[in-house]
Length: 279
Image (cartoon, rainbow, N blue to C red; front, side):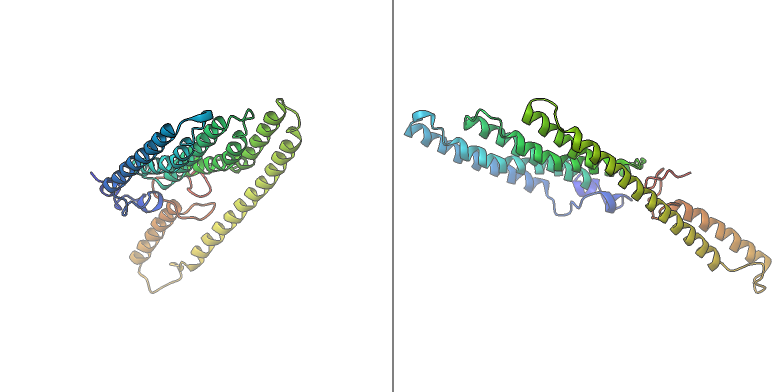
């Protein structure tokens, strides 16, 4: 079964969560990766042979530089092809491709640090800096996965974003001094101020969404005509209108979140947008 058949558009969640695989051909993609590896091994094998024939005088292994530099591209190419073929969800693909790129570059920097024979581990600084972006992406990825599975998103989940920056400051403090020294001073104010701001914004949005939903409910009630005063309808027609109105109200409560008013997919126990648990 092909990727397009396995995750067809008949799936109710396809258009929202699944990535577009109409232009992805796994056979052509695998052939491209194999051709890339053949070129990589052939060219770098030739460079290593030239370096060997010209002599490794003074430990000059210059073939390692193109070997590692080209290795970044081929590693990312292989990782991207593997992730796309394995994970159908857009959120999974985005995070794992990001992780593969960061891991590949980090290994390259580490090997470059070793080859250049620098005693100071300078590679840790760019790796830690790239880790900030990966950590922020991981926080967003976990939120999206909870929404996709219909689970509730904690109200203060956004606090993890400044927390990732604080972890980086802890690393800088320990790695630069060898022990804990000054990181308390920026970390505590950052987390306190972030908590106050995020909590205030969250409560304000909840109030706005509640008011919006109440206004929408009142508007729907005002639009509905009064069956008791409308004499042009028979008793049977009035009863049908009342039953239809009740069905529509029940359907509306299931379709729209009572707090934010957003449309939700059927079968979710929590709102996909604000995390409210449905009764």
